[in-house]
Amino acid sequence: MRRRGGDRDIMPSARSAPRRPGTTEDPLRTRSLAALAAVAALTLAGCGGGTDGAAPAATGTAPTGSGGPALTGTLTVFAAASLTDVFGDLGDRLEADNPDLDVQFNFAGSSALATQLTQGAPADVFASANREQMTVVTDAGLQAAEPSVFTENVLEIAVPAGNPGEVTGLADFADPDLTLAVCAADVPCGAAATAVFADAGITAQPDTEEEDVKAALTKVQLGEVDAALVYATDVQAAGADVEGIPFPEAEQEINPYPVCVLSGAPNPAAAQAFVDLVRSSAGQQALTKAGFRAPTS
Amino acid sequence: MRRARGSGVPLPLLVPAALGVLFLVLPLLGLVVRAPWSTIGPQLAEAEVGQALRLSLVSATLATAVSLLLGVPLAWVLARARIRGRSVLRALVTVPLVLPPVVGGVALFLVIGRTGILGRPLYEHLGVTVPFTTTAVVIAETFVAMPFLVISVEGALRAADARFEDAAATLGADRWTTFRRVTLPLVAPGIAAGAVLCWARALGEFGATITFAGNFPGTTQTMPLAVYLALQNDPDAAIVLSLVLLAVSLATLLLLRDRWLGRTVTA
Image 1 (tube, each protein chain N blue to C red):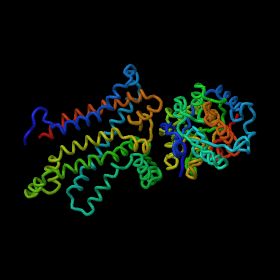
Image 2: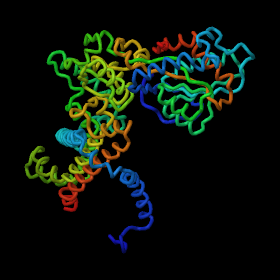
Image 3: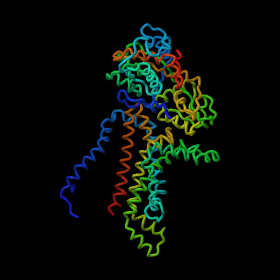
Image 4: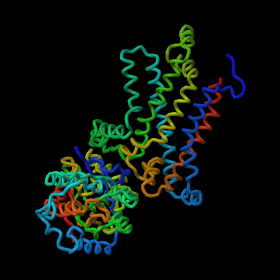
C-alpha cells in the first residue's frame, strides 16, 4: 500500500528523484485571519491564469497547454512530498500528451525544496505545502508570476474502522476516557492541532503526542487509539482501516498549497502547461481524489 | 607472557585503536563544541528536561531489573541445559538485536496492544490497557535491551570453568545450590557487564518506545524522545538534551565500572 502523510521535512533529495511514496509534509502553521485573506487574494491573481489574471479554471479541459505546438525538452517540478502521487500522475498525463517532453520531479519537504531553490537549483515549477516556504522563494525573487493557491489540505479526525470510541467531533478530544493521539506541537501537524484546539476552546487530553502525522495514523490503523488528528489526505491514503470525520473547527486552520512558475525556468512553456494542468478540472479531480480540496477562496 | 615496553601496545594495534577512538569520540566532541553554552542554564531548568531524565533513569533501571530476573536464567538455559533446539532458541531470543526497534514496537502492539493477542482479553475483561503508559516504556526497553544481557551472561557461562560446578556436584550440592553458590559468583562480572550494557541500551532506546508507548511528557517521554522532538524545530535544545543524557550515562557507567565491575573483573 502506498501511504502518504508524514509531515516531517525529509532530507533534500537528488534532482529528478523518482516518486517517493511514504513521506509527505503538511507544514501547516498557525496563521492569522489576515493571512487567510491574503491567500484569498493570491488565489484570484494566480500565475495559473497567466499574467492577464484570467480565471485559472478557464483553462479547464485543455491540459496540454495553450494549444500551441507540442511541448519538448525537460520539465523540472519541485513539489511538496504530499503531492507525490497526484503530481506523478499528472506528469505522466502531460508526457503522454507531449511525447517529446520529459517531466522530472523532485519531491521533498517544502523547506528543503525552498532551500535548494534559493541555493540555485534549476527548476521550472515550485509547489509548496505551505505559504511560508513559498514566501522564502518569492522573497528571493525567483517567481515568474505571483504564486497561486491550487489546493488545500485540512485537518480531519481519523478513527479506526467502525469508530469503536464513538467519536463524533473535536470536542471528544477532551474526553479523558478515550485513547487519543495528536501530533507533538513541535511538528507542523501538531502546531495546527494546537491552534485548532485553542480556537475551539478545547483542552485536549491526548494519551500520546506523536512525532509525525504518519505515526499518529499508524496508531489508528492498529486500533490502538480511538481517534487521532491528522490531515484529510492522510485519511484518504490510509484506506479501509481508517474512517475520517471532518469537523467544522478545521476551517480555522486551512493549509493552502501555492504553486508558481519560476523566473529562471529553463522550460517556461512546459512549466505553464503543468501549472495549467494542475489547475484544470482534471487536475483538481485528481487532487480531490487524494483527499485535497479545491481552494475555498 | 612477555610485555612490550612503554604503553605496551604494539604499533599495528595502536594505530587502528587510536583511529577507533577518534571515530567514536569525535561526534561527542562535535556535540560539546556546538552546544549553546550561553543558554544552557535556562534550557536545563525547563521542567520537561528533569521529567524526561527521571523517567529515562527509572524506566531503564526497571528494564534492567526485569532483564536480570528473566535474562540470567535464560542465559543459563542457553549455556548449560541439555535441550533440543537450543541454537534455534538462542537465535529466537536474540531477534530483538537485529529487529528494527520500530518493528519491535509494532510487534508489541500486536501482542499486548489493545487489539493484540493478549492485550484484547486484558482490555475487554479487566479494562487494562498497556500502551501509552510508563509500563509500556519499561516493556519496550526490556524487549530491546534484554538480549544484550542474555548474550553477555551466556558468554560468561560458557567461558566459566565447568569443573567448579562438577566439583560442587560431587560434594553433594544439587543443581540449584550449585547455581547459586558456585555458578553465580563465578560469572558475576559477566552479569554485571551484561547489566551495564542492557541499562545503557535501555537508556538510549527510541524506536520501540515511541511506537509502543507513544510520547507524552511525564508518562512516556524519555530523553531520547525529547531529543528527537526538540530536533524538529530547536536543534540547540536537542543538543543540550543529548549532552545531559550523555553526561548522566557516562557518569553512571564510570561509577559502576570503578565500584563494581573493575574490581570483580581483576579478582
